[in-house]
Length: 100
Image (cartoon, rainbow, N blue to C red; front, side, top):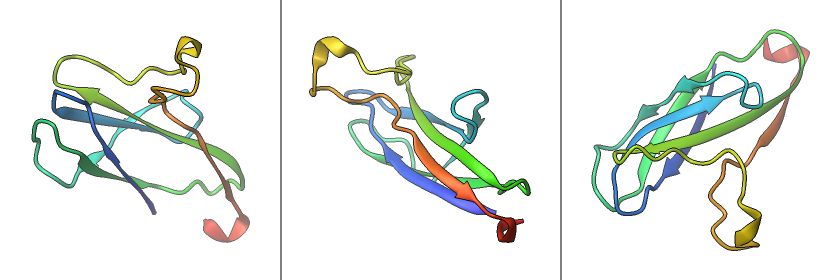
């Protein structure tokens, strides 16, 4: 098991959910919160990933959900240029034979 962790913020609403993908966004699972829900606050989370036995590259993503129904968008809106970058950013990891 490998623990993936982070922090999420949802602006003027509360963060109510975190989904984590270990396959580049094909499937999603819910993460566990480490902090209580609180308006205007960052909320820490963790996800215990059962590291795959098959060696290879894996793409990790996380996305937040807000109490107002908002969900982090999958892609960056190009109209914002280098501003308002809040889409999930992929993290590439490599699992070797020793990980299983």
